[in-house]
Length: 343
Image (cartoon, rainbow, N blue to C red; front, side, top):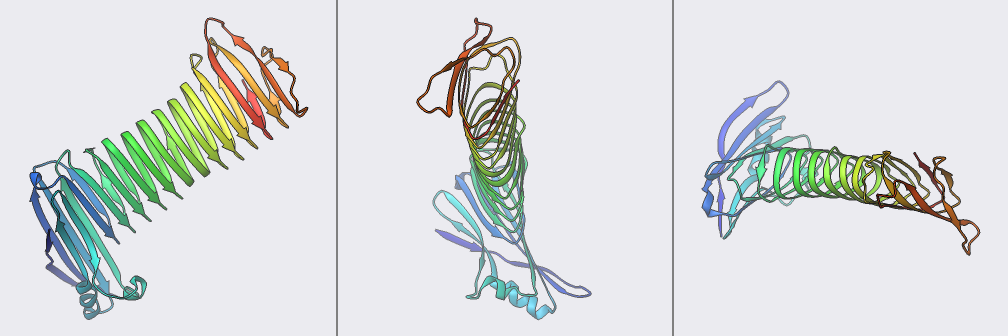
């Protein structure tokens, strides 16, 4: 294992109210030397581009303080290191002083910004705090963790995992994606298989083949989706243009399915304390199994269902077939302490 530390003094700038010291880390490695790049940073942004036949790492450290002596003191404690392992290049920003981070940097501004270029097909892992991560198109496996910052990318092909807290997350297109979001605003324009958890987040997926979601609080909006598997508590969920199937288990929230394709295969919803609203395009046919208790039910006039007896007098089970019998879609609803509306 090799460790490379390279800090080159670039400039010092005297401002009206502060002094600034700038240093730079620059390093490059041939593409066949490593299979993966891992990068750990805080207090700055990470900009990643893909291409070429080298790993190219550039980091700029800027320290602003009231005096140049103070800026020089702080910059001596900050080091960018490149640690060479057999198949992994690990780049990190280290703090070389045994003091609390808050105490050391009181009254001082520090920025560590990375510009990285990585060959196609190599794996990339980035962890960044108090800064954003920006990518263009990326081919290969990608793992990203961002806290108090944003993540933006265009197209990502490969296994993509992400965790984001207190920031914005936006991707134009993903293939296989797994995400964890906390107090985040999330937009995915297009995806193949999207699996995510969200807590107190606003999540929007404009188009996807498959969405598997587990959310608590916040909102979830899906558009033009084939398959949905949803677990939600206290979430306002809205699904637009469902093509194939939906399985949902919701508690204390809202679930709206707009414009379900008349050729859908199955919709299976279990809900408690939830307002459920469904609208199905005309022309299809489906079996209906409806179980409800302490629930307001609003059905179309042509929904003729047979009521089955139950042991519990407060629980009602109704079933029947609606529409064209050439089709065989399945609609199953188990709702308690809520409201059902079907159009």
